[in-house]
Length: 114
Length: 168
Image (cartoon, rainbow over all chains, first blue to last red; front, side):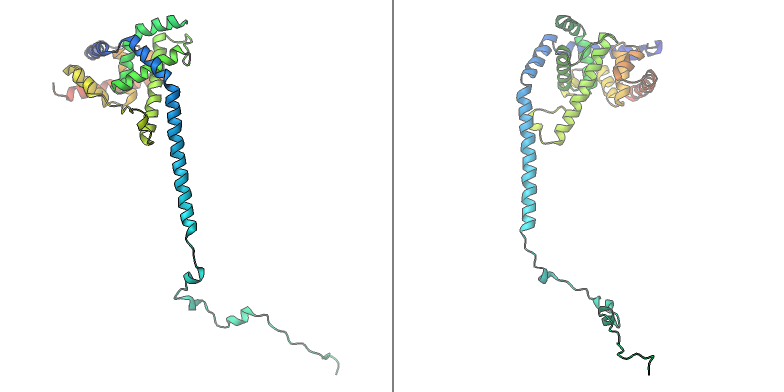
């Protein structure tokens, strides 16, 4: 697929290929290593799961401790009541009228009859 | 295909597959060997099954490429999580021994290739190093023929520029 003008590039890649081929591990050694690796896979999986479980447990304990610490601090609401210095601006004139129910005057006699 | 026949095919393609694994792992020899071992296991225990739609070489290269990507993702996850104690984590960098063992010309080529985007590097490797056609390279890389051709042309131009810029 390469063009004639790409011959130089092809040559360089082939030199790379020759070097890699010379340094390649033998096929049967690779296969044996793969099988040995496969044989220890369950142990590695268990180790991985154990590490993940320890990590999750650690995070859970840290979260629990953090929550407990936060819950343990007593808060005295009376002591921390805060009043803004501009509160007086909210006090309206005649405000007491709004807080009470107006009382209607009752008339005992019928005003239509003398 | 029987296990014996599979082993024979793998043996014949071993050197080429190792070169391809090296290319998929950015020249990191340890990572390439891991990827190759995992690929052979997948092939031999039937997790990767050859269905005869492509040539065995194209199919094997696709398996190696996917396995290398899988191992790369796992290594990245290990680097994020404090699980590196469970084993050495490949860093995807060419190891110094491999770099030193190369001749000047091939070292320059490998260094220039390392600066190219992954897809361009893969297509150039498959075409020039493995002598595949662009269509076969597209099949291995899992892209369309048009995309592979674009990667090939752009990669070739970039590689020529890089090699020209490099002092002899």
